[in-house]
Length: 351
Ligand code: 5AD
Image (cartoon, rainbow, N blue to C red; front, top):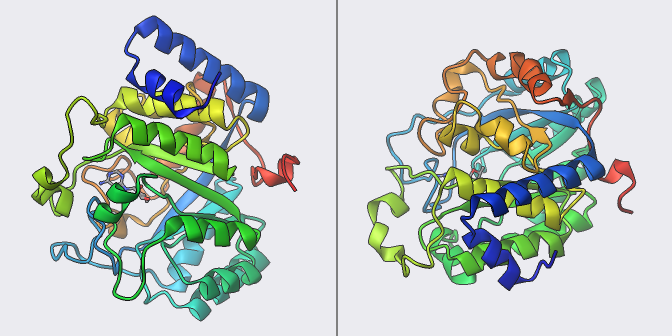
């Protein structure tokens, strides 16, 4: 298959059920061949919902005054990390808004403790941080960093990511820094952002391949009322024929095409997908190219406040809830739970 923009765009526009069935089978076969039947579980801990930014899609944006803000302390976070160990996960992911109340030194100390006292791989997803922070956290022992670039279209990127004064937002630059520092690099996009064209989504997938990403997360854009995109919808309108819909099906297409374009990447079946299809979205993602699930381990008292979009899947489950029935769900689709950290680079694919 060709991974040029034109053929990717043709696939994204395809609605023929037989052709899509073929695409999904192909993606599933490539997934099996390159990363096997193991589904790696990464425990997600949403450590703070403070955010300095005004991203036009995200409910954590600083202008959202209706959100009660929290920042977990180190003991609370470490408790969740131990939970990930108990549940047999190989990786924990610490995620937050862009919160400069999370200081370089405080975070580095927490990273050192986690790496000294647990066998877990540690992934950070803390937004656009300065190089010195990324360096200190790598030196402290962090293994991976997630930062979605959200769209490769420069004009749309600028519209949805207002910069902080004096800091021009440039996620591509940060992705290069992360890679150069020796982190495994995760990125991805949202699907169906108002103003996102088919051509630009095709370019996003071509970009995943070009960046040789270790992890690629994609999920449907979900409207949050307390955001600029929801409050000023017309400011992003493009020709309706070009606008990508934020549908479940479009998400499967992108997962499948991403698997074909990046055969050995780790690709999660995301919470946003489980949100648009609660009954079996996650499973279908896993059968159409994905090989990772990120169960939510955030303590229940904070979970509803990490509202990047409304009605997030897992909201009402107990703290360990999402992980419990997961083994059964995984077995029901003929797969198994992965052991160990499930890193791409350790598999000998690179370096
Ligand atoms: N809908 C879907 N995904 C969203 N994210 C943020 N806001 C939304 C939304 N409204 C995604 C972004 C971000 C990730 C943590 O969550 O892609 O990188």
